Image 1 (tube, rainbow, N blue to C red):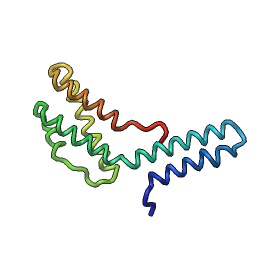
Image 2: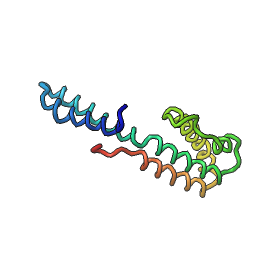
Image 3: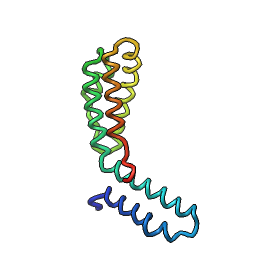
Length: 136
């Protein structure tokens, strides 16, 4: 068991950056170590927050769908739970909600400026919630 996988990924990235990269013999190898380290840091961030951010998105999507015009698919989404808390199952429900949001947004842009504004607010919040820290 790895009790803190996010921290383990960060530790691996730091080892690459400060132990292995300085010992490389080419600029390419050092840059490659830097790239892999940054990807590990990003993966560590995502690992720590993936379920929480997606579930928060799902709850906000449900709130948006509740004020939208009636639609059978959106109503069904609002009652559905992920099959489990495994990331793949949460991703499946999240992806469904985002697809439904795209359809709703196309409608709202043409006929409901208030809903369109709320969707844009969700999208800005969503982007902020999912951004990665530059330094890991």
